[in-house]
Amino acid sequence: MKTRIKELRARQNLTQADLASMVEVRRETILFLEKGKYNPSLKLAHKVAVALGSTIDEVFIFEEEDLH
Image (tube, rainbow, N blue to C red; front, side):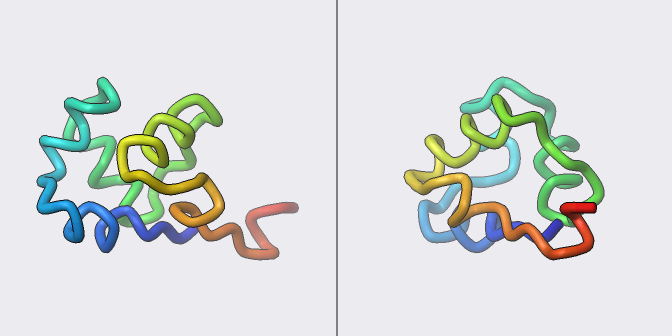
């Protein structure tokens, strides 16, 4: 899965640590999300989207292979 977290985070001048604090996870979790190495729970995806002022669909890009 690809994400736009880094791009959206940069628009708001947020560091990975800032976003992690906002959604109550470790900075490494944000790093793994940005690199597509971690699929978040629906709850975490929602928290990240809200923190970035976006929707889940705007933040997370689901590819066809992710759905199988």
